[in-house]
Length: 330
Image (cartoon, rainbow, N blue to C red; front, side, top):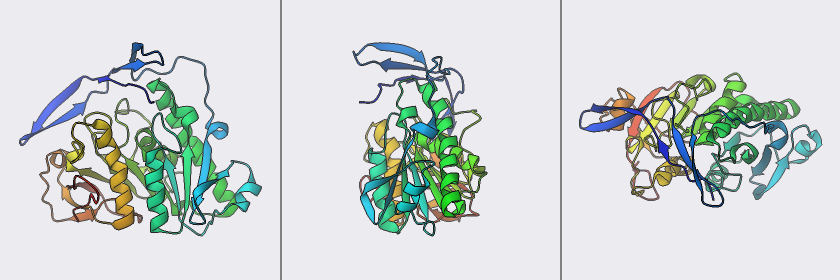
């Protein structure tokens, strides 16, 4: 069971048309954390870690390779073990997707299962599932943020090693991350000099990332895209990428009721469906504030997600979804 997290924020609230949006204050925020005995303690959410425990992604991250030849049982890839890599099903001529989970999760979570199945259904490709739970499974959110940055650099080193051994091209990679993993996906691309072909942030984490040096940037890859689905609580409010999609205004996803977890998770369900079936046509907006209230009428449209990068496209887009699968309205 993950940590119980209650976030209190200072916010500046502004109105646009007949909708309300929230601009997060980058200042101190606090969390109630429940330990194994059920005791609650109040901690500063964004405080840097004070303990001496060190996390080393080069030795503690675990990498699982899946292909159509082994779609359900992974092959471990160990950094530095060239013999193991060469004996695996990794094909440098194929596209490679790299999946990065969020806070307090691991390689077997729902995000990885849903996205892995979609990628392999769409194309014969390499899919590498990153397990950075050694760094992300901590109740201390400040430590999890620090480890997000460390893991991003470590994953980039891992990718560079694979490419040096196999001759694979970094431009043929697609790095997709969810929540803290969404922020980490950008960090991976940045550590590879922005040469990754496609980076997708799936509702990247918002708390404590506003104004942070390591926050997802449009320049982190040749093409970057973010899907925002829980902007008021756990996701990031403002645009981050070349293209930012705000389904249903970025919050209150149809079918989710009052569940923020459901809103957050919808980002990867939408993305997986877009890989399998396409759809999700977004309308371009004058600004993200217009996207939050669905006031978007510019003539340009663009499909959200998908397996092919939309290199050269930019802007903010709005679309609406169904309450259940299939989520796309076209």
